Image (cartoon, rainbow, N blue to C red; front, side):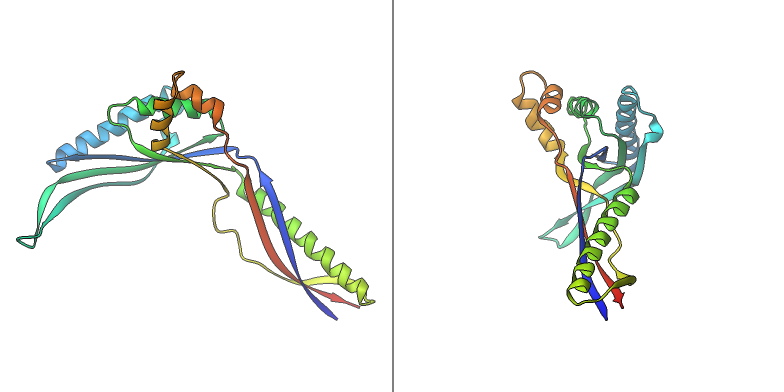
Length: 219
């Protein structure tokens, strides 16, 4: 007799990694000024981050673009040039450190031309998470298969087939922060935004679950 069963694994993980996704933008009349001023904004920010103990190499560029803007004239039904826009997207990852994060956010909010950003909380070793979850799911499937085999008077032998969808996304907390939250903290806290964040913000645990299907044979 063959037994097809479903196994479900679920675990909670405390975030141990912070990822900040930055967007640096500026708009100028010429390509040269957009490139010059845009890169200067990025370089100034990098210098600030290095002053906090990071290396410039820790800030990884995901995209870099200087593009021409165009505006549409409804009356003439034509697009007209409207200067140039600089955009550079940068990611910074580091071990979970709430105090360091709060310093970065407060320092960023005080800049004349701060970047916009979003912050995610994740785990450093996705493979370890995947292994633990799959093991739990398999154990759950085996438990159900053994119960069914005993009820039917059979002896459970081997699992001959497992079906599941691979993990295809980062393991991250549902908690998020972005530059808008930083502005709210800055206005609301008389003690300073850095202390406010450090004392009040704790990201949610990461909940990961996985379902697999196992085919067992009996004798």
